[in-house]
Length: 208
Ligand code: NI
Image (cartoon, rainbow, N blue to C red; front, side, top):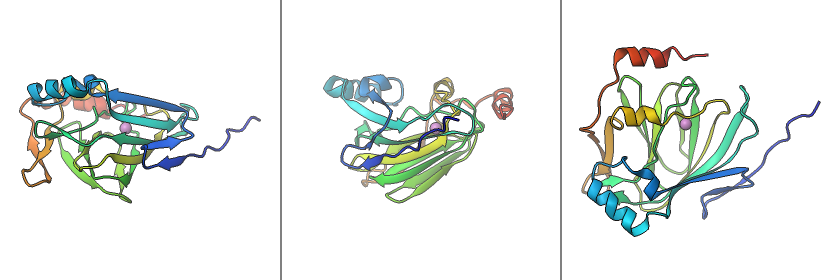
């Protein structure tokens, strides 16, 4: 029997990476077209730093087998597009009943969660905060602080990601913006369209 080998990595706060990771992916600012409400502000950010890394993920993926687990680290730059804080694209798991765990390492973030039928939760993440993302919730992280947001995470290896679910609804139901006092607030996203009941039921039925 060839047993899987244990994995080990060190979370490097300065680089925001998992040392010893077996894979890495990055999203540049240019990759994030369509996410932000203020298109002119987005174009200005792209003109200034379009090819710079907005956020990245380094992870350890032993396999994609059911029952296995992926662990890793994510790092996001601080900043805003207009009054809207930098965020990840966000997703629901392709097997939507798979959960996830996030743990704050550095910085100040928000885990923005949306149920398929449009309920919203915002979980503030500071160092040593552990956030449980329940099955079926769409999730996106937002950096609302002045420093890079670094989090570790773990999720079932066969979860997969569906990014289109957000785009198809015109974004998530709320946007996380500057409250004008250096903090954050959630405001309604005018482009958002509630998912039809049939689609919500279709998502909920994917519970293998
Ligand atoms: Ni996820």
